[in-house]
Image 1 (spheres, rainbow, N blue to C red):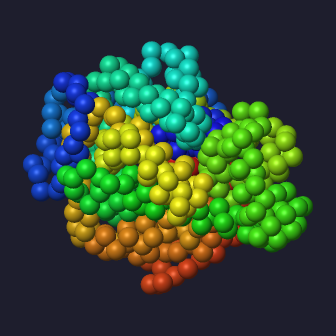
Image 2 (tube, one colour):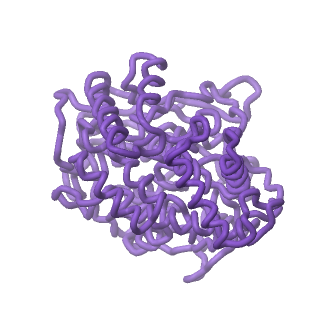
Length: 543
């Protein structure tokens, strides 16, 4: 993906073809997110889904669902959700529907599920229809779009630093750009911004469950999709049949412990994304330096020498960019490229070696477009921001981000700068969720939840998966001793076997189970038939 430009850093790797409101608009400075125990959601009829082939010759079916903008006003305005389905390949043994969220927030499921369909275990593809959708506010659903045309959106993106700002002048321009984005969103999407929360999407998900006729929900969410799953599990605990949460957000970090106080740290610094990314960068350099240049082009013949080479390259780029490859843009590319080990790590090493030799690298290759009506919907930064900034508290004073950056850089180096500025746009965001959810997270569910965490993850730290397993009332942690963001996109036959048994018949792995990836970094990859793409808006942002 090209260098990311800021807010919600993870948008960059979300898709290959594409690449993370109110009637009285006002800037809301508090995060008054409703907690459980409030008035129940009024009953709403399930949507009627009319499925048809997405495009001629496609193996995927598409439909559109209408749902209320505000579930507290079910007779009011409706919005549309774009949905995609791949039918079970063994219909005679079909169990039901597996709903999939690809992360973000802001990941368009109608694109990413078809792109990543082959990464689901074959046993799961046989037994389940796999369904995904563009969440409200995103992609081909009723979407947040704060620009009148694509040209203005492109101009806005080009007018501030890629990755994060460096120096006082860039910081001022960066902050001004996101204030401008907030003003534009307040003008262009005043009725939508307060109604794109994770809790709103959880309500949509329950409506989709009802629409396909499943008595209980079978679900898999990666990255941001884990906080969506946890929200659903606590809003609709009796409806959980099976739920796989892969590469998790810590619910307490997401909500700032449901506090009404001004947050001291950003969402990602609370979660520890900076430290986890730094540890993953160190793994990349260590493993690269431990192999030959034939396996890792950036190797300097040893781990220490390779780390020193990387530091020298970053210092050089601060003063002398290579074409458009600045220091900050390169750091963003490094973090984003660590999401998918194969081919991401090998390709990243090649780009770093090009920069070391003063050559402009070739940009990462994108997978082919899936056979859906719109394989390249608009997914501007404002779509993920509307969810993240509306749901998850971040400092409202733009002036604190530079100090937070320095503190994070002390503990996490270059990756700390990247993750600090990833949510600066929330400082001026004009809306908070009208009907959000901030806990509790321990409501007993009808069936247990399977939580999957990867040891070295550049976005969602392993500690966040541990926290998710501890927060939920009945969950089992499955550990991937490996690298990258999500086990789905960094295959482990061991993980897939446990997930398949759990999704099909409810069998959990034994307590303390660990798995390894099929193919370690910088070794010859084994063909898997899967498509490697990012894991959502923060897929690389966020989260």
